[in-house]
Amino acid sequence: MSWLTVLRLPAPRIPADRQILAWLARLLLAALLLGVMTPAHADRIKEIANIQGVRSNQLIGYGIVVGLDGSGDQTTQAPFTAQSVQSMLAQMGVQLPPGVSPQLKNTAAVMLTATLPAYARPGQAIDVTVSSLGNAKSLRGGTLLLTPLRGADGQVYAMAQGNVVVGGAGAGAAGSSVQINHLSAGRVPGGATVERSVSNDVLGGDAVHLELMETDFSTAKAVVDAINADVRTPEGFPVAEALDARVIRLELPTDPSRRVAFLARIENLEVASIRPPSRSIRLRVIIKPSPVPP
Image (cartoon, rainbow, N blue to C red; front, top):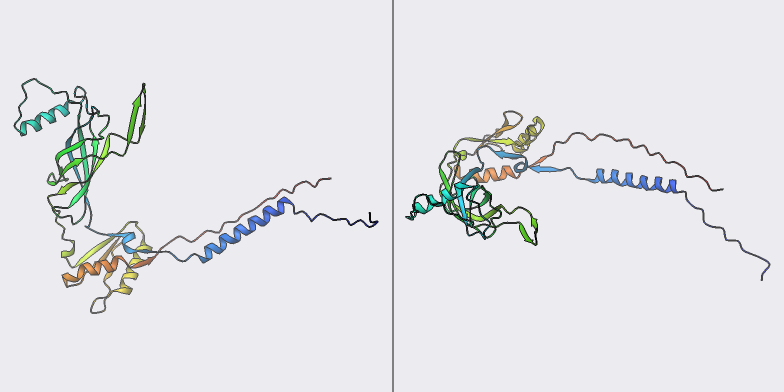
């Protein structure tokens, strides 16, 4: 054994509090660099404003769903279901004896709702939402019979019919049951056909109005500046004018065939987002030093 012994000293150990402080410093530096390097956000006009008068309309109707597997309305508690079936059969030439109330477990009374898009034309298909009106347990597997859909003015704008698609599922056995999602409502994709269009003369005038989704003077001015910087009248005058903090008047081209392309160009113009100034946040980190072992 050599008389010389080499002593290996351990590497200096960094205290835990200094490690935490260094980690926090790196995290704050990364956050500051990310905030500086993030580019300015811009929105298209179509994302922050709508054209006044170009809107959808709500439709509603009352109908009957048949073909259910014993999960329909209990006619003793929902007598309007039996009355609806009797009325439908009478229209088809089937007369029930007086005083007879059919017990129909495979039938359910439902309410229908749909959205009629702007500029919808006859023959266009739209989706329909079907919701149980009585005490039906499930609409799964049912078929919606031909039902008119009416607008707020009472006019029929679409006719709906088709198989009901239910997104939920349920099962039961030995006195226990499991259900996922809702079984008493469903959809008929493309189940309604538009029969009447809603008249819309938005493009018939000399100007249209843009409505901002949020009332803000700064945003209205930014939209007007973006439009006037890109488009001018043949005489060189601005085409956009802010009427208030929400509505902007936009002059249309005199040639009707150019108006659709003109509005498409306006919708895709980018406007710098108006955001409140960022507030400085002061962070104070207090690190309790760990006790030095003896």
